[in-house]
Amino acid sequence: MTTHNTLSGCVTHYDPQALPVSAAQAIVLQWVTPITASERVPLPDALARVLAHDVISPIDVPAHDNSAMDGYAFDGAALAAATGMLTLDIAGKAFAGHPFTGEMPPGACVRIMTGAPMPAGCDTVVPQENTRREGDSVAFAANAVSRSANRRRKGEDLAKGRAALRAGRVLRASDIGLLASLGIVDVDVKQRLRVAYFSTGDELRTPGSPLDAGCIYDSNRYTLGAMLKRLDVEAIDLGMVRDEPAALAATLKAAAQSADVVLTSGGVSVGDADFTRTQLQTLGDVEFWGLAMRPGRPLAFGRIWSGGQPGAGRPALLFGLPGNPVATMVTFYQIVRPALLAMAGAAPQPVPLIPARCEIPIKKRPGRTEFQRGVAVRDSEGHWRVAPTGSQSSGALSTMSEANCFIVLAHEAASLDAGDTVDIMLFDGLV
Ligand code: AMP
Ligand code: MG
Image 1 (spheres, protein in one colour):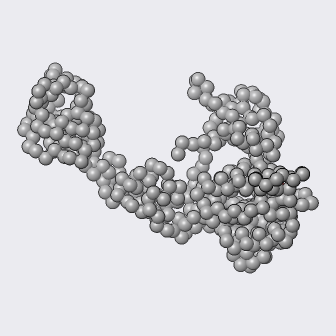
Image 2: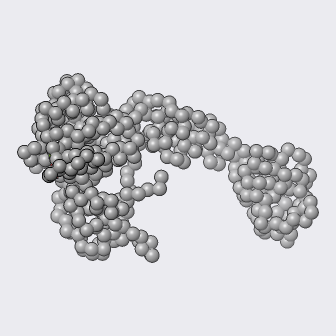
């Protein structure tokens, strides 16, 4: 353990080569400066963007009391006096968009469709299926409906003057619809975060080109590009960089010039070709080098400066991710993603952890957080059960594709027996 001064002036007591994940997440968030600049975009383009200001509802939604059913609207006071059947004369019709404006004599009703404004004097709707039509009248059992039933009240979804959505909201489909329901056509969102990324390694080849002896296809740039797309940032693909200090330095400087955040993959371990690590030491100020995490032990975090040394030119936040493809993804999801969201101005949105019964024993030693790939299913009693995918190799990307969740084994946790409860983090969501 070493005492370690962070740039932000705080002092931690962790080994900067193997920080606990929670400490790393906290340090990273201290370094984040959320984007302040905003831009106005048309509503259909606002999905996944970060709302810049609170949106206050300019109107009541719905704008008027209306019917929740197809049926007959009437004054529910009639129910109190009635015993057995109630028969009401039909005074007219109300459709959505076409209110009933006629006279309604006492004891009458209005044929009404879903969404039609409630006629004056009516507070109750008896659903059509509970009625019997008798010429110009309708009959129904008085106990088939209670007073005020099937009436949607003005402003019940959103009252005028109330905050419909808060600043920092990452807009979802429902939010786009909600804003439309307020009559809003465009919306102020935070400017997109610019994230530059590249892969390093002499062994890398671009998919589509021949695979030379001893080489592999560059997959990390594709997973990174795809994960960034999901976050709706402006992703800047800087390609593949060879394990050459000068090439790395040039790309890192260019990246800091053009982006708010720079992601690299590979070269941060302690091998003889791990030049990303040495270049970061020269060009930037690195806060920590590794996590007490599996996969993902080597991970560099700090800043890189476009001017080629700390303090010179423009700084960009830097995440030097490990080259092993699963480690790249796990460190992205656990460390980079929350930081990018915070920088993009998004309000914190913790990913839910769900308890599940572990189907087989898992070996684990205390002192690091593990993110195993798992397949979770919900059993017939509604309980989640999970088993790790076979291999947990940090190079085997197929295990990420096979899995539907991370099995999260906490820093202090030791080995588990079959039947023990573990936390899982599901990959897939609805929205
Ligand atoms: P490194 O972190 O550079 O030592 O790389 C660790 C492992 O990940 C090595 O087996 C590399 O060949 C592999 N690797 C590094 N970068 C990539 C990449 N972009 N795509 C796929 N595998 C990679
Ligand atoms: Mg390498």
